[in-house]
Image 1 (cartoon, helix red, strand yellow):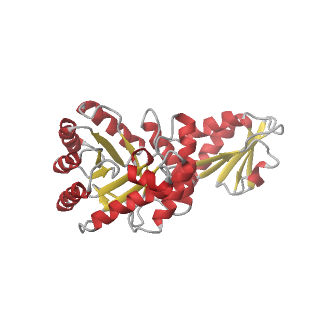
Image 2 (cartoon, rainbow, N blue to C red):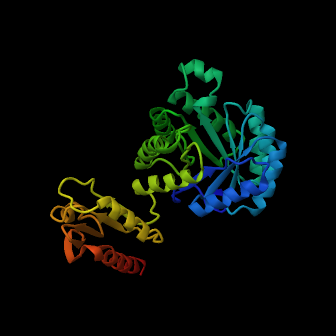
Image 3 (cartoon, rainbow, N blue to C red):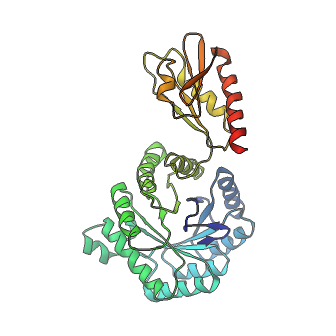
Length: 347
């Protein structure tokens, strides 16, 4: 399904999204953030359609945006109609607060006429009172039924360009909801744990929820919802996708947790290796181990690795030691070897 120049679903790579947190009416500030998101690796950006004035600014932002833009609409369906008129690449609506079927149909018909998709964005914070009463709270079942009702409404309008999300702040409810709906609809799914929090706690919740679904083959696009700088969402999303072995953005560095056998600064070596390979986007697996005895065997799955002892280091490939060098030369030798592997992989 095309969203601007990005394809979502249908076997395409899982797409990374984020949302701006600038004042939408601030055209310069919002565009600057969109460019920063794009540089960090974001592939689709969402912007809040707060009111009629902000929607008009989205139209201007769209003309200069390096990314496809999604208008995030809450409460007022007319903002969705205006956003479509302003040329956005997708509209996200919340069925819990957008209004009745008559309003949904107007949005669907307008989007169909312009050839843009709609994301049905259900979350536990805005489930209808009816659903809350029926399920006794914002459960996975309430999320799924809310989404299915909206899907049915759009399908009755002969509208099928949908992307669906069902987000909860509970990881368990999120995973259960996506597992259920993935077997019931053919549309792409946008993954995320809403209100995940700030920093490491938010990243951990998102990693558990999004990662577990990706490992099940569920999900076509993701957003890691973190409090604070949206650039952090992109870095976390890339790491989640790479850890799930869904997409690769560069070297995968594995390292041992260290123990009393380690006689070198493993943590410091990892820092140096990370800095050394930050310009490489080839999926090379690199191991940094602290024990020259067990290191090569434990990291035999790596393309290349290093380990060290008292005053010396070893370089190994696929578990076999290839070189023994002075410890001070270890990183330089490793970098040369890595560049040769990258060159060979890239042909």
